[in-house]
Image (cartoon, rainbow over all chains, first blue to last red; front, top):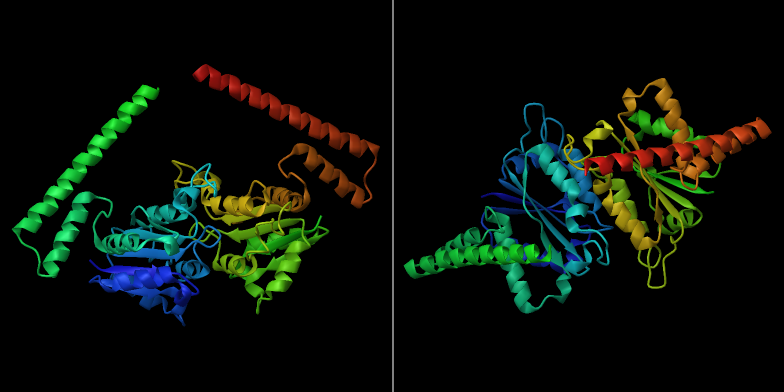
Length: 226
Length: 226
């Protein structure tokens, strides 16, 4: 899978989050780091060729006043033209996937009704859902990075892997896809054998069962409360 | 009332909508037209002084990929600094009002669930609600301008007035405030007399009664459907 990571960040050298993600992306075959604020001048045809060569697009940015920084807006306005991004007969993006990697300095629970920010991340990011819908892109659930500077070493290691999965796994939120990814990683490091394969598939199966049981319990509890 | 109209539009000379609004704003005392894309270089202190001198801020822009163009984002990131826009002890914006004048080329009904864009304008503009909440600004209901180029002469005349009211009337959606505005306009043109005053106050009263009756009917109908 070819993944184009479209990064919008005006002061990226000072961003520990983006430096960390860049190091993580460097370990992913087929992933291209594309920092918008460094492009000058903008070559629309070259940008469109990059997009067309990708199976997955990632919009990666910090929240500035609840939205992406200016460079993403500028790039979209210039590059996602009528005829390319959308057209009567279908645009060139149809069938690709779009992921969002969004970082912010509040805790995750701030972004919900009644939270300190009073609005959910899904609501704030609704323009990207509308954009995906318009262009035939399949939108992935966002990968949110809350308060990167407070993460423990273990949490960072976890994020490192979750981000790599987000760049390439068909459905990053599906346990079966995650297990397949682990197996492929082991294989790439020459460590895969039938035991590892069995372990990975068992893990995926157990996880899916666990999720299903948890849902059942949640539904039963909701029933009680009615 | 001092109103700062913060316009974000990269090709404003080619925008009949913005040219029309600029002409409308020119007739409003205390309104300042401030086109962001023409500012170069940006003087943060001067921008902050402009903002502080205003009682009402207007963000005015066309929708580009469901969001404001880049210049508004750039300006916000540079000018709305911590300490100015928000602070532990309260920022400098608290108590002012914020209006949004948003233009787009789809019909208004496109922006709702089940509509051709599949999302409401309120949802798309949620970042501005969050921003107003954070900074202590009172957000006005947006003034939406759908398909300006298809408006009839009469609809344009209506928009001309509605926009002028939006720039200065305390609550642009309140009939009483609209009536007071009409009266003030007549007075300014030397045409106000006691008949005009009576007409305006009667109009406001009747409109409010009308709204109240319509709400009652709507509620009764909802009751029937339950």
